[in-house]
Amino acid sequence: MTIPALAPLFVGDFAHYRDVLVLPGQDQRPGIPAQELVTADGLQWVLSEYRRSQPGDDERALLSLWSRYYFVKLTVPVVGANLMLGRELTVGLDGIEVILGEGGVPEAFRLPDEGRPFRTPPADGFERFRNLLEENFAPLIDGWCRQVKVSRRVLWNNAANYFEWLIRTLESTKVPQSMLADGQQVVEAPRYPDGRPNPMASPVRYVEQGGGDEPLRQRRHCCIRYRLPDLPLCRNCPHIDRPPKGALLPGDD
Image (cartoon, rainbow, N blue to C red; front, top):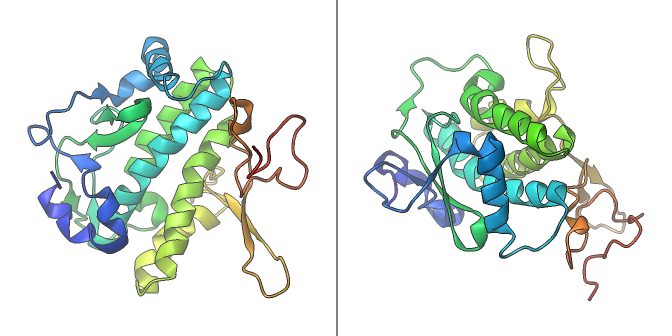
């Protein structure tokens, strides 16, 4: 079911994402128009499906955790195709569908077409990823925050966390630096070129541990999943050293 133009990307570590992006007529699984995710009825339906596998009454935590599945599933193949293949994919909310899998979490995305190579090189990372950041992430997060009283910072950090992780992962491979510069800018520049704050900036910090150990990769904002039954803090949670009252630590029974 791999989109033919993207097939060269899905090898090695990327093979896991081979069937995440599909085309109309190529995959017959039922999908939800992504725009419905920002409506009251659509979001409540999605969260009710998710509750079957992840119980809990805190809608903020449920939405935050569900969004993590959404962001990682979409970010890895879309950013990978953009940087590695020079291919811009159509991922605006008004044109894609979300296919839910077991547990009510995103399993795949149905795109309207296979995208296209950039006609001219993007001026910077914000232009390169405009479709993903401004036509998907931004309206999605704004819509969710209108329905559920969850912090925008939490949701943007969920998105940026996976974006940054992917860029750093690619840095550790033989991918040329020139191919990664635009991605690095997105998670390093504090502002857009027009002066707007960049909500993707500095999503994590690297804390020196001493003793020759690798620095600890720590998120800037907690995803608040610990508010759900039986879920501990993440290992890279900013609260790991001073956990909120009642929060389980990683490894707790």
